[in-house]
Length: 371
Image (tube, rainbow, N blue to C red):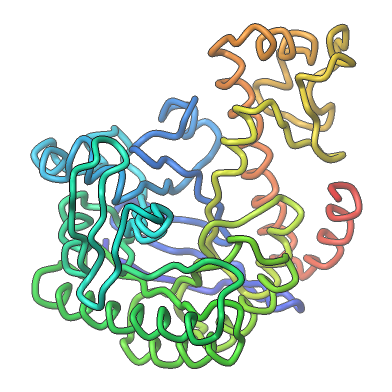
């Protein structure tokens, strides 16, 4: 079936309603991708995720390379078959994970030497190696290797990392042209540039010259303010081709997602719904709820009386608090299911609002209730 991206409608804010077709199915955009780092979304079965309406999952190159290994996954028929997920998958290149190792890695123009967080063994990840791993995994959308940096960072540091990322993107493109299959996998580039708008625009312009099937905006939501994240996203997105999907990496809070969508972002991912669930933080139509609080010990109401998820239809706050307080595995399972439903439901509302040109009304309403 190959790849195709269509913009079906555009909202007055600039938000886009779209459809991304991949070899493993169609993704309605704007889309939120649940994070399945090690080929699993923590606390959810693949059936759960299908029931929630998830159309695409994200998995991580770094973690799957270290365990169980990309060659094993290739032998098992690729990541889709290995994890029994017949729908689209995106793999991130592992760049963020490697660069978060701090003292355990050394970056050069050739690539990154790093030590495994599992056993201390030494590895070398080059742009070409990152692609070889992702080609073995067989994800529908694969990412170039990029250099992520801390925030704040000096402009000279941001410029160096952006230049290196661009060079790595060129190497990835050349390697993919020689060894990849454009009918089976789509290679996305990544815009870097720290918190410097001019550098973001410059990096985006150079990246677009590679004529890739899609483009990501990386290195944000790493400590800078939401306003800065939006400004950098706007600077980059404005230079990316309208006919290609735009992916903002690693975001965000529910109330922030609408701002990113209004800037023309088509795809997002974030660990927040699953990680928050494991810590007893639940998202509701009236804001966050900390289920561990004693005030819920005798509360017969669901998490959110406006929510139609399976958890809210069946379980009380009192029961969910009991599960969390006693450390039961079921607490994570139910909390995660609810939070993912909340995120995916918001995305459905966003797509509907864009279809009718009413995203600003939805944004004003949701942000007033969630913040």
